[in-house]
Image 1 (cartoon, rainbow, N blue to C red):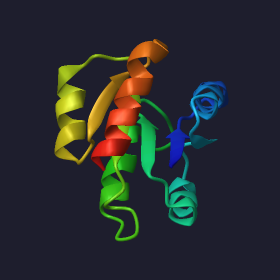
Image 2 (tube, rainbow, N blue to C red; image 1 turned 45 degrees about the vertical axis):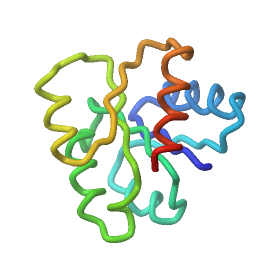
Image 3 (tube, rainbow, N blue to C red; image 1 turned 90 degrees about the horizontal axis):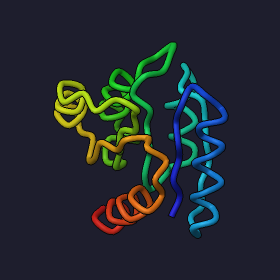
Image 4 (cartoon, helix red, strand yellow; image 1 turned 135 degrees about the vertical axis):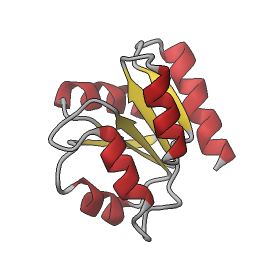
Length: 121
């Protein structure tokens, strides 16, 4: 199972990749930029963890673009954020996000949620 973490901060996706690999997953990180969709098409991940607040393209716009891409539209996506904003969560779910995870760095919560998403899809 391949998981891709997309975030505009390299230290964030590097941290996630380290923990996910230690948990037995094949994981990689990439910046959220204009080349992200092309890179995701090449990788064809089993799950994308997508940051909400990033630039130059924010996570909701990237989710919209990903779900409109024929090669990626069926890829499960979980949004990762440090904000528990219900409005943003609702928008992400309308756009096709399967889950909305808080970046609380509590791996006892995040890893089972990620495992559940991979089993479900």
